[in-house]
Structures are given as C-alpha cells and as structure tokens.
Image (tube, rainbow, N blue to C red):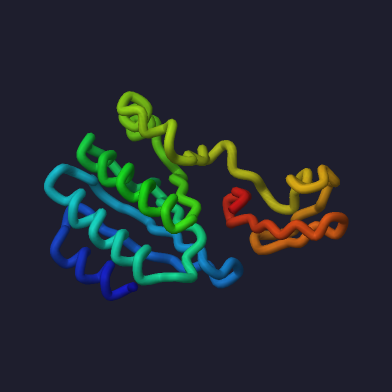
Length: 166
C-alpha cells in the first residue's frame, strides 16, 4: 500500500498522499492529503484509493485528513463521490476530518456533504469520554481509541483517535 502512495507522490508534486494504519484499530486507514485535488490529478487520486480499497479485504474504515488541502475542484468532489459508492458497496465507513471552511463550502455547494461524514475539528472528542451505548442506552466510559464491548448488551463498537464511532 505504501508503495502505491510513493509512486503517486513521485508523479504528482502538487498533491501528496500518506497512508497511516491504526495499530489500535485494525482495519482502519487514515489518508493524509496535502496540496490541491484538481481536475488533472483527481482521476489518479481516485485510482490509488480504489486500488487500496479493492485490495484490502480487512479495511473497515477510511478517513481522509484534509488538514493540508488548499483546494478541491468539482471534479475531485466527483472522485470522492465515486469512492463513497465503492466504500458503501464494500461496507467500509468513510469520513473526512480537518476540513477547512473553504473546502467545506465547495463540498456543501456541490451537495457532497449529504453523502459523507464530515468531522469538524471542534466536534472531535477528547478521551476519556462517556458515551451512550447504541444498543442498550447504558452509559460507558471510553478511555482511548480502540474497540469496546458494552458490558450490558455486548454490542461491539470502536472509536478512532478523533472520537468518531466506526
């Protein structure tokens, strides 16, 4: 997987990708994006991510960290929409984090915000935190990112480092 990102990065100087596997939560991949996602690189971006999704049967969650994205074109939004369709087919959770206001406004104007989970930095939770179990409604203390089982109803759920339920 890393070699795919390295190959992409050598041919696209204005867009760099870095994949980070989360050792605490197996099956979760964070893709840190830096630069501009534009018309001329969005197909290559989509191809790399599609290859990773199709070749990783254990993948359960993919998070795109847009902290260092300076621009996103409507064509790039189209690439993300196609990735959403693929992740839904594969039953993979997909979300965007650290989306700045400029990028968020493009996403909202194009209607993309209706189809993807966008986690605002100010909405991220700090550990430890108390949550309500989605299965039985009991309150549970979550100490850190990872997988948890409700002691009452035995429902299994996990949280990433942003406090987002996966």
